[in-house]
Length: 377
Image 1 (spheres, rainbow, N blue to C red):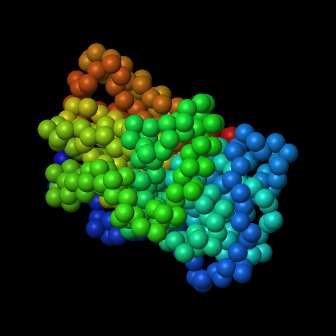
Image 2: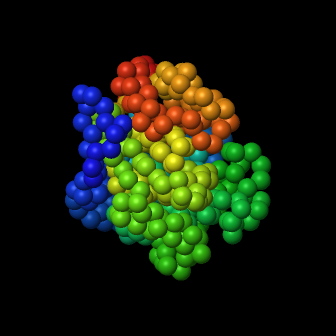
Image 3: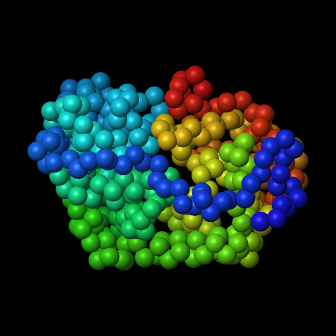
């Protein structure tokens, strides 16, 4: 891919995405031996997070409470045993299942939010024997749900099924699941989807109506990247991928982290082609900067570049911008914060000018988030 003006930075290395990177999968650690059912811990029972006071519990993919006896999570500053740490909480739970010396007789398991990695982690403790049968798919799907990368297409489809079940606009679940406060909705989703997950695992093809729409969007997006219609360039030192999308492509909805976003390219297609942790998204004259989830959690397989403050970049962009609206940014404590132009569609800045400001800011701004010591961030 030829170098394009404005897509480099003096003193830094800018590289196109390599075919070798596309084959790098996954970040989870695989088992070296089959765990027999006799060596598995007793199944735990799901209990809502708000009902854990004074109750012995295991927390997966989240923050412990006072009565928690074991945490199996990749969250910042987690207390997961060092020998069990993996890139996703699901992989951590399987490492726990495979190590009898760590097993504890704890009756309940819980989590403070609902998502794919939390669901698969929960299922593995509630139904360990069944989960071991689908171990590789569940770990792969946890990578897809959290990081947008996958080895098996069925792993992506399993995530799309979960997203559809959790989307009140299309979900076949009872409407009552989506009523009440967030804690009540979380509990209802776990109760409903834990019951349905074995059926999805046994025959994902039978549930095409839940995954077809996103799967088609993913395939079309992968084709656009593979043919070069959508270009991805990397700045290794800044851990930055520059994703350039033609302005003529229509925006399309995709579901991720239980929310809907509208962009021409499915995020899984971008993440499958680059592991850079910061994304500069250029869609005509509409620009966004976004951090991926990988540098919010504690990864084991690699250490992405830590998040830096967006505030200096926002200030510099607002000084240079002449279009209506203001540049704004999400808090860096959000799992996947973005920086965007609020109140206007197109920026008046040229792509090279916008990128120059962004890259200078990423290079010089102070550290904002350290998942290995977040209190010091």
